Length: 103
Image 1 (tube, rainbow, N blue to C red):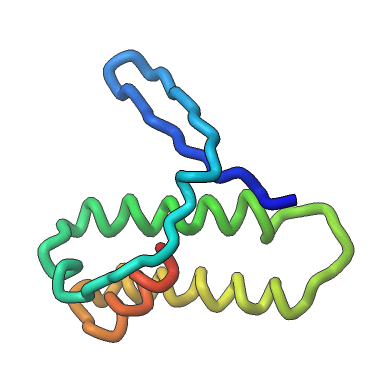
Image 2 (cartoon, rainbow, N blue to C red):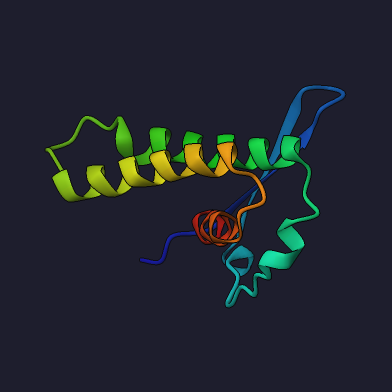
């Protein structure tokens, strides 16, 4: 069975979240231009990084399942790369990796 994609809309004024689940929320393609990432503020890049890290920690890294060495190593590499990207904001290679991780 195909997993349904989810969407959460947050109202920061009232601290409420609204969820929506529908298969049409899954994009068919994604066209990412790293040149657009240069205009993103450091704050927004940091927020995106925190989002990526929270998904890694929540979904795969701290699960109580049998040991998955390869998956753990990939997740550790993503965590390490996000830290490097945050330290070297503006690096073309870093921005490309960031967009790939976030997609």
